[in-house]
Image (cartoon, rainbow, N blue to C red):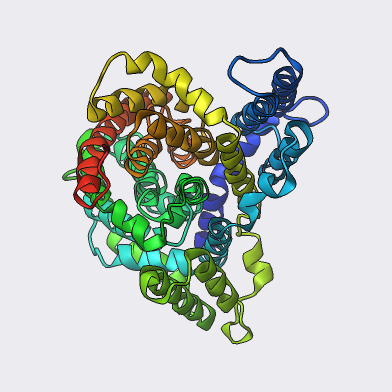
Length: 501
């Protein structure tokens, strides 16, 4: 009974904290001040751009679509509207204000990438809506059989990686947050000790925060900007990137995982610290889940089938999106015993609609010339520097981290920067695949501010660490990660046939 109460507290901790923040921001009518301000600002900017004087370099349609783009970003940054409404309203506004044809405005909703996201979210729902995801995590951590903090963190990291291939980053963070907090509770009563504070902060920042992000970049279906980039490359450039090809293109980034672990251990000085009782209490957490059930076993069979089909796509030719839908259908066959109603609440339907709208927006921005216009604004002053591709990449990446810092939504980041980087690559005469992939990857490793990425924000909020602690910790990790991506991944891409120039 005590364990059940503890688990409930762990799972609702962040939710209660966010509700308290929202309640404090609400006005007398129960409307969030931030949301109300966001709605007013978003529509004000949209109407000014749409009805205002002509912007040099933009046609009327382009100017209206640019206004919709700014409306989208403001709505995402301020949480002005529910994600699904933003996703559906974005193409609608392009049709009504920009005179964009309906098939073009909603193009992404019929694309393979959209169906890939739909299937991936359903698979993630199985991990969240059943004990399967938590069972996998606790089973792996139990195998470590150690009280040492470093070994426990490695076990949690391996568990993160094990489920990261089939779960979006935010879902993965939600799954591992209660697991990390349960382990941290083994030190209840000792929170005043400096080493315990360091352990708890590291445990929460790394497990539900950093590891899902570092693995998310590697797996096509685990990070929203990945899906947006794959969709944009296919629709605008005719470049198809399968699940397996994405894994191959990003292969050297696996090297960042041990670097991240070592950085966390060094920064919080964890090398010889222990969590008393971990070797007995963690197996108890696993035992509380009971024996694995047939629905969980069927879920593992279906997910394994999907991973096999994704990896072998070059031989059977079934594209990633169709494989994802096949797996989703298999999961709910009558003999599987998985109750859709129980799983449904864990499926990110709202984010799916948001992704569809975001990808559609990026494609139209490209088609009507807004991307080219924005690219020229950024590149014209930089071209005079006459830099070679690699130094130029350094300058552009770290310059783009400035506007990227305030965009907490991964979807908003992808929507804003994916079409822009494609346009910049073409304007510079640089390879589109290496330039866009390296740049978007770098912008995904953005920890200068704790508000820059949803998963990191969740982890920081749960840890109770100060904002300054998160900034100091995150700044060093961001610089290390970005330098690694620029130097190592560009070399790898050049080696396998994707040179910058």
